[in-house]
Amino acid sequence: MAVKPSLRELYIDELKDLYNAETQLVKALPKMAKASSGDQLRQAFEEHLRQTSEQVSRLEQIFHDFGEKPTGKKCLGMDGLVKAGAEVMRQDYEDSLMDAAIIGAAQRVEHYEIAGYGTAKAFAQLLGEEEHVSLLEQTLNEEKEADQKLNQLAEDINSRAQQEGLRASAEEHGRARSRRAA
Ligand code: FE
Ligand code: ZN
Ligand code: FE
Image (cartoon, rainbow, N blue to C red; front, side, top):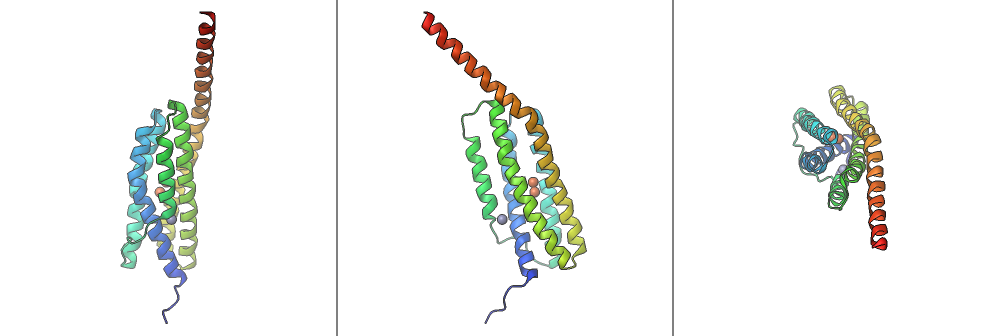
């Protein structure tokens, strides 16, 4: 009979999942940057892309330590989140509304990563992998900061999206009125 997987194996599996999730993001983040209208939002995605490449390297470092390859797993959760983000970007939204929608999709990604790194860090702690704990914590903090940055950008962007909508419906109203007057 096969030996049942241990916590260590589950830990390695979680790390592979995170590695695959991050590599999916290396491809998705440039698309989100490109779809963003606001300079600050675009720069935030570009900055997080740079961090994401470092996060990939940190996971590679951990795997190097194990003498294992980080490949061989597909993160289905991130696959779904990336697809949901792509669907958002296909919508016919005005600039700020699109930015607000992209932020919504991006924050789901960050929260998903925060959950994954939190789990992996707890396992590393239990397994006495102090080096890993510190690497995972650095990434975890970057994910939290990215989420906070998006919260901060959303304040302005959401109200701009609301005003954009009000302006558009006022114009629509004006057009309807002049049609009636003609
Ligand atoms: Fe990440
Ligand atoms: Zn996953
Ligand atoms: Fe992230």
